[in-house]
Image (cartoon, rainbow, N blue to C red; front, side):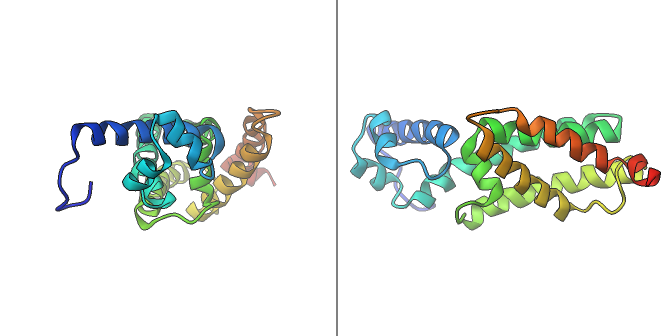
Length: 194
């Protein structure tokens, strides 16, 4: 709810919650371009009610995506808690891509398939700040190639997002196989062997 706005009536708040739940599920199953009419139907409200709460599709993204992106903080926290820096890095990227594979909307957001608001982009940036710490630690331990930068992780996330997007209906775990290839190439020991 915007600052300075009146609190929602109980029925309006309930409708908003049902819309958020229906949109979260639809975006997870079909991506951020899921049609809005079925979302309204699933919530048991009219499309007019959906637009009364969320005047634009982007307003709906803003209500859903920051919390979902914040869930990546837990993945980063677990990776950071791992005593072995390489294992922490691997757990982070596996957790990131596993989450993307389960949630098409989050996958779209991380790949920036559609224009996103500053609030959503800020949540993405925060996630990559966590990633940068994990990368720096793995490099300092001599486990991750020194030339692997956060921008390379962003490119890898985009590539994996595309792979997930294209293969989710036929081979949903294809990303795991490809990630194994990338990880083999990212080990510092693999770079020294060349």
